[in-house]
Structure formats: C-alpha cells, structure tokens
Length: 125
Image (cartoon, rainbow, N blue to C red; front, side, top):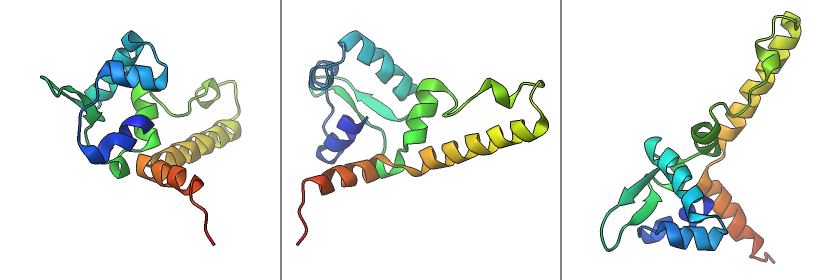
C-alpha cells in the first residue's frame, strides 16, 4: 500500500510483477492481497496495455485501519473481550483498548506516512 501511495501522483497503474519485484513479494501472494484490497475499494484495477493496479482514492483518504480491517477483520481483537470468565471490569478495559487501537489506526493516513518518509531525507537549518 505504501508503495502504491508513493506512485499515486503519477496516476499510472502498476503491474503485479512490478510491485512484487519492488517489494520482494511473490506475485501470486501479492495478487491475493490485491484482490482483497480491490473488493474493499481501496485499490482498483485497469485492463489493457497500461493495465495494473492503483489506489482507488487519494492516499489522504486511505487509513492504516482501512487496510488492516480489510486484511484481518478487526484491527485489534482478543478472546478476553467476549470471555464470560473475565470480570466485566476487565472486559471493559479490553474494550477501551480495542477502541483506542481502532481510533489510532483510523487516524493514520497513507498521505501522512508519505510525508513522514519525505521528512527523513530533509535537513532543516
């Protein structure tokens, strides 16, 4: 996702082979990931000579939480949230933790991550 976000300004679709080579991911595995991301409308595909995958919306409108929920369901889950063996106070504490993790994941955009990455190469005087 981060790699696709960096290529978003060019508006060009990227092939599975190109992405796989750049990220060191087996193409077949990457394709399975892209299918999930496409079904969640996080990426889209283009057919034809200029075909491939690209972000379905700007990086500032895609959050870390969007991607995590697409791939794994809940960003944070624990059996302790549902266990009747745990006292209600502990279940409530686990629930607060879950809410905080979800809120944080939903507040981090890929635009923000790109800007942080760009700042690492800059020196301020």
